[in-house]
Image (cartoon, one colour):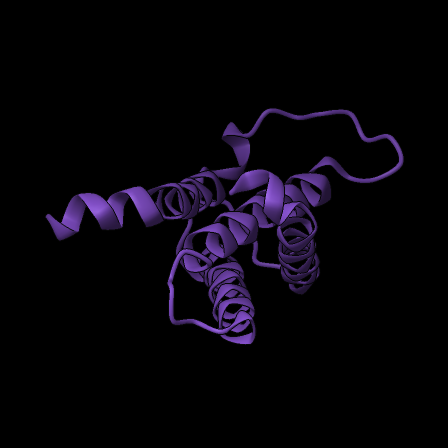
Length: 127
């Protein structure tokens, strides 16, 4: 019965990551246009989807009994950064009518770090 335990532990993070890949692969012309206020809406979206992903990774990895705090943080951050980089590479070279952006990757990275800090701040509440 290892699979149900793994799904329970990692299912939300995996589903969120797949959701990110699906959303970033939607052709540009099919994305609804939202009016710009102070910050471009796509920057806000990138920040929050990667913040949520990093948060869920931290939640999942923190349930590993023999992992140190630094290992949990490192693996969570590396995983989130790799997904951010992958989405931008796919947008640049694979996805139709999409453009990869170093700026988006930087926002993904900032969102990932924010998700790690959010988890550390709220850890007691979510366990």
